Length: 338
Image 1 (cartoon, rainbow, N blue to C red):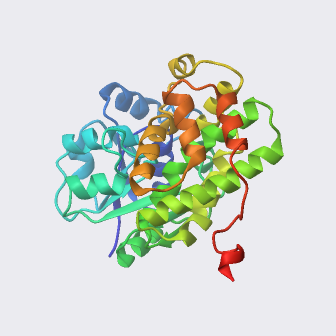
Image 2: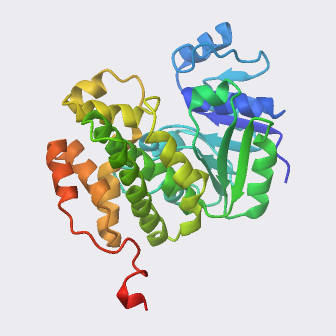
């Protein structure tokens, strides 16, 4: 399987950065945006000044607002629209059967509690699916700084072809056949990053943040396994790698939102000043509901949902988490394990 032409659907910061990375890898790339005026401006200035300022785009990186122009000649579609808009976006495209789809969205659909691969399977069952996820700030990747990600597809041939299509000296994709584990890591880490931001905003210390990251990883792993993913995937780039990055930097929109919540700002005021979608806000409720359905214990994710969607004070949630009983860290390490 050879991939020469790539259509990137979604011209936010990450979509633009991935289009640039694919171009650096020698592919013919078309970047699609739904807004004609944005396409015109990017073509004129060779820069996505709104979402990725200061990064020059090559003259032969095509930009369009016509989905047919992007899709018709593509060997693969890279879907870089927000998770909550994925279904509507797919409904507006005419995608031929058999064309591979790569989701780079990190979230769970709020109206159905489905992962992105489940949405793709429902809407386009005849198109092979893959996931691109991992620790990756768009600005750094676009600037050519070293970045490593997971490219996961149940079809090993597709995964290998995608690795070859995107890989460069500084953009390093690692393959996996665990699509579920890879996408769960990307979705859950956004919710946990809000929790880590709350810890930072409340000035609870680095010990607390380290504990939250570790216990949050345990939650994500339980959830992934319950959905059919592999625990080992959460130990990789799309799991702990992405979690550490987004729980440790103000560059993360989710972490920054949590920090402001921890300092006492109102959620509505924070979102009103954000030009980009903060995926964790929408995913928190879906994650909590899906976890309950699967009978997976996720107290940190539940606490974030309580802050975001039930108006519970962050301090109250922290007290509840600290009041939970202590016990064995791993289920197979207690006296009963022997």
